[in-house]
Length: 137
Length: 304
Image 1 (cartoon, one colour):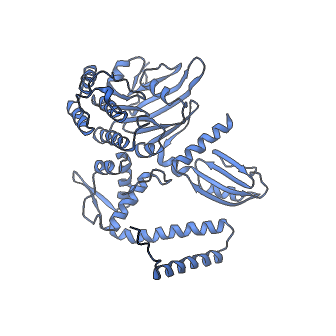
Image 2 (tube, chains in turn cyan, red):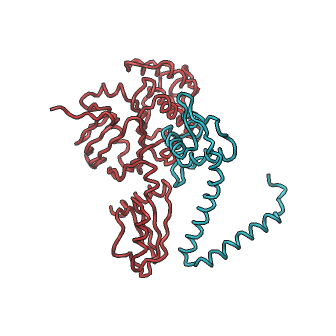
Image 3 (cartoon, chains in turn cyan, yellow):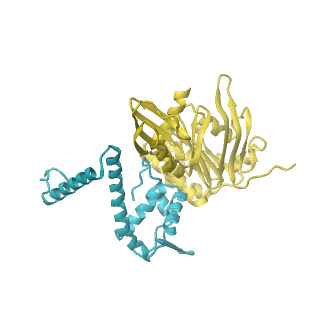
């Protein structure tokens, strides 16, 4: 999990997101235990209070649950959340683009044109990948 | 009359002012830090951070105001307080001629309680050889020894005055790890000052910005990040609107560009700005701790 202290996103949200990602990619599966506060705090080098806030946020969303004396576990819901989250993330990026467009005086039609152009540029790049530099790792 | 003792406060500073012969280092500083939380104090050089830390530790007496640590007045009962507080000063005062083991023994004799096991574990983890002379230690090793000596009597409050300044990245990481371990194990309150905003992000629950002896803000770090935003707008007439948003931290007009940092950000605030005459293309910019810190300081510099 990568923590960026320079980001405007509070660290506890970065940790919560990191755990969500880990659930989405199957690093943690439903029913499995999560690292203890102490283990995660030392691993990502942040205050355990901050890790606690991340876990609290995930528990409020029903993605993890605690068992007395046994620690924290991934809930069934954790997996279902992954897809919705991916959609939300894409949407957030789009919203950001639309805002920038509107701020610079573009109308919805103009924004859509740019969006379509980026999509088709991406598609053509994917079907014709640029030749790789053999020296590159 | 009995005075109310606040059980939840680890430290409380009330109207603290420190005057030196030629200058006032700290001006009417009031601050309260809850038990079990970590407070990071940031500010440029000469802001009064070390003076504040020294008053907290009872080393410097304030000109006016009161300092309470764990409900005890620091200047009325200095020895009681020292038993319950650990301190890593800006410059380390361990006698250079001693061996590491002797320095440990000396400190051990000053305290009523001392956890030999914690002490040994930390020395081992930091690879501090008891037979080595203090003067032979690198800066990083010295700071780590200073931490061992500051926490082995199991204090409830730990004061760190710019502990990681001048450390190489590896030593810094090891020191941070040492502090985090004591927080994990003992849940003690930590008060630290620093120039490193990364350290604040990693360690602190609440952050205070000190400038020219004054505390500009003291807030939960998450709230501060979420509630402080910079707004960029185009001013068609080249001057800001008549009705300005509340709680402006900093602003600048350059040509037709208006940059304004606001605290207590809300969507309504942006809408209000957008609705005004002569304002066009309003954009909200998220701020990391570094930009936010600069905006707070910039405004003060412009005023003074």
